[in-house]
Each structure stands twice: as C-alpha cells, then as structure tokens.
Amino acid sequence: MRALALDLANTLRRGTGGTERDGLVTPADLERWLREHEADLGPTDPNVALRLPEFRELRGRVLELLAAVAEGRRLPPAAVEAVNAAAAAAPSVLRLEVDGRVVDQAAAGSPTARILGEVARSAIRLVGEGVRLGRCARCGRLFPAGRAGRRWCSPACGNRERVARHRARQRASRSVG
Image (cartoon, rainbow, N blue to C red; front, side):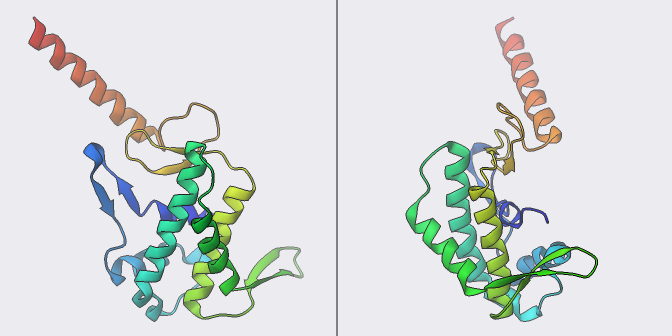
C-alpha cells in the first residue's frame, strides 16, 4: 500500500517564492484524488467528494505531524489527537485470506470515515514506524527520505534546482563582467 497520508498531505504544495498550490479546492478535485487511489481505497461513493472540508481538515493535521517528523520537532499533541480520532472513527479488522494475503478491512463506519481512517492509519504507520521523512528543497513536497541528506522529492526537482542555480551563476557572472 502506498503512503496515503503522504499523498494527501502533498495535495497542498509550497511553490517557489512561498506560494501555495492547493490540489483539493473543489469536490471534483477530491473525487479525482479518490479515483487515483482506488487501488488502495477501493471504489468510493461519489457523495464522499462532498465531504471535502473533512478531508482538508485531516490533511492539515497530517501535514502538521509529517512536517514535525521531517523537521525533527516534537509531534503536535492536537494533530496526534485528531489523527487518532480519525483512525478510531473507522475501526478495521485484519483478515487472513485463503491465499495467505493479509487484508486490513474496515469493520464499520460511513464511507467517508472509512477513507479518512485509512489515511489516518497511514499517517500513524509512517510516524510510528520511524520512517525518515524529508521536505523537498524545491517544491516543498514531503517524501520518504531513504538516505540522510536527500534534499529533493524526485530527480526532476533536483535537476530543476541545479539548472536554476546554474542560470543564476551565469546571470551573476554576466552582470559582473
């Protein structure tokens, strides 16, 4: 399973110059995000997209938690409480399938609570299992930092940053000479 918590958190991105780009502005945006994660979440009721404020609220709390981990700060108690409450609102049961697969299946709750619970459990796993997180120096996106010192979420962001620095050096050398 992908890290749903990271994917939801990264729908709010900090761009260059401190500007933010929000990928969850309308119910259609949420519906698109849910479709993109259908492999992890299963098919969802179209009415879930109408609960956008609940997803944005959980996203904010998940962002607080994951940013604290990425920056080496203490976990914010209010964010911990909110994520735990979302996970508890949709209890799950581990099931062993005949083919040996283990399935974490929602036991109860509304379709919205089930999805929010999956995202919350994803955040709990990331934080609780000590996954090292980083924040991209280029786009601000959170990512699993497999090695210490990793600064970018992807090779593309690293390349864009290096090209920008190169161009800045070229401009500076032209203005001096």
